[in-house]
Image: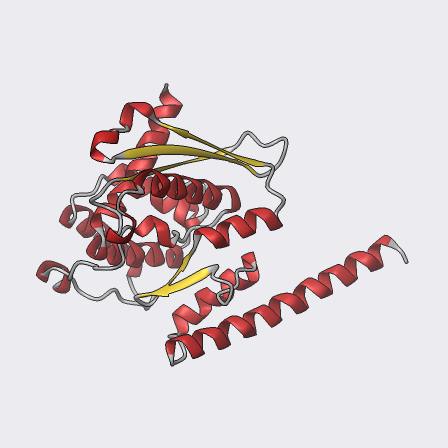
Length: 267
């Protein structure tokens, strides 16, 4: 059997497996949620399934508040499938305070032997973890650091469950947040509207514009924000608005990881 024929067979097998996995994920979502997810959520599930091979049934994905999130288990399984060369984790001593259970860790993922590595930072303290894991802040910081490094290494924009902070008791949306106008989905002048919406979010939640820009770039999977499409920016703005309302502390932790990355480059 020639090499080209073997390659073709492997491609066909992968496509068959991906389609089978997608059907399984959709069935799992319907059975677990008691309904079919909205079209946007179903589309995102399809992308996560076909692009990365995540299995909701095996715990790779979780559906929370209308959004799909990847789990630590899902990211580790992805790394194993991709034959990740190694993961190195270390504490950022200058930013840790064991007495206050406040920890910051850095993880570096090496997808291949020749890779220079992809770094991610994770921080955790009693204010941004679920009451169920109080006392295990250092482990949570490690998990978040590894997750962020893995997402960078494999080009995953959506954050993991462990990165969003406490999901046991999400804060109620503020009255100001409820007054924000809905985001138009048509193409008539939406570019300017999206920019205005983003600026409004930055002002309302007192976010650092430069860190938001860095996060938007990574979230969209592009090298510079100018390369992002309008749909990608709209998706990011909706994601940012939702996260800022539900868990601003976790969002700030995510944004601060880009500040630390920039400081490392400068150093």
